[in-house]
Image (cartoon, rainbow, N blue to C red; front, side):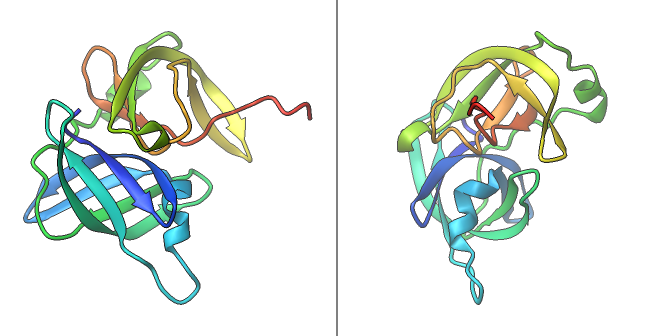
Length: 173
């Protein structure tokens, strides 16, 4: 659970994952919709992130800057202020990502409803869910609102393979 973090931005709360920590800088990824309220026409507000230790216990709360985002893919990149994070996720290689198939085991780590990180297990359900012209994977790991932005990890290698970005529901249309 160490590379997982909780992200708070003007009323939005979700999860995130530390991607890299080197040279005094730490970078994290989350879902755009978790942090979008921190961006206004004329300014950006700092985003609060809560770091956890390897066992999942709260360790420290820091500020982060929103440095890049992609609304269509619902992703945002954060640069943590003040200090280097001690844990970073191991990223899956492109080769490992190409090997992902339906029923590949995975687990997610999110901060549902503002709680500390909670892991859930599941599998890849499809590799081809299209939403607004973008292609997404779907999984069957139980998630709750607030898991958005949290990491999706390969169930066997524990490498980061994705980010929870949306919940698809049937709306009758």
